[in-house]
Image 1 (cartoon, rainbow over the protein chains, first blue to last red):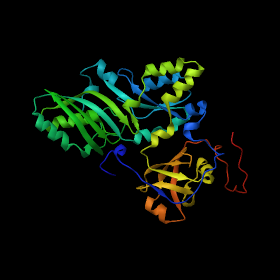
Image 2: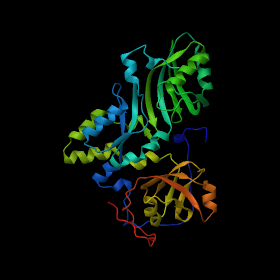
Image 3: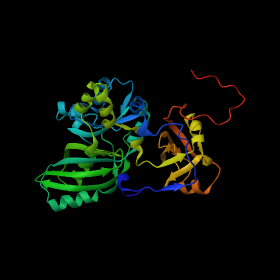
Image 4: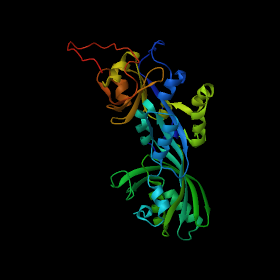
Length: 94
Length: 260
């Protein structure tokens, strides 16, 4: 692995085969109809302080009437505990 | 207390969420020192934490508490005011910033804790392109016309999460077999990222840039370029619905029961 952050690195593409794709099959991501765009979509949410990541997911799920939703990378699971109890175990790092 | 970029996956895209769990993150952190330290010394110690560090996850953690190695890509934009230190840190997935701050405090000799944290990046998702819950409420309440415009602006194709993930582009005729869980064999490869190594998490794409599946590489990019036969990657998670591309591979003589 390199020393640099993935977003500061350029990864080159190697060509193994010359090949075309049949335009009749599938659909480029940017051209998906709206229902599919949502079905295969991601939202970059700016999480406010207060609710947990899980609560934010639950809210958005209900707001947009989704069957499934998930988040990538919890932002502080136990922030709540710490707020309620300043010197509780939750805030005492080992 | 903790705010910022939280990538959220909708419906079928939920299957791609593990890509975010593996991706690098960037945070802006406000550290509170428990004693007075010279600015020069503080900056020097912060510099020392760039590179590989060893970290034991905190007592309350979602993972096993074994010491593990994590990479700090950079610590930048350091500002200091009395006992408060503000900095921007780029790090590997699974780095505990609260712990990083505690450890910095130990090395400085005065102790420190994390006062505030804001995630400014998760992989290709940045703070500048994030939407508030209020924006999402507007999307949920919009009429049909507005909804299309807002949804196109706020919702990104799941493929956008894979900008920094090593990838392989596969032939149309290979797509269906991958969707049914087969491994990727070398003849199916059209283009591939440089620098893939065995066991690396990679993504398989169609030539139309559609995500097909998440896979584990079985050989390096060099090997994939050189050889003609063999398995290049093991399919870990299929994302594309199997009916998207036609099934061109031969059926076995055994009758397969219809899918329910």
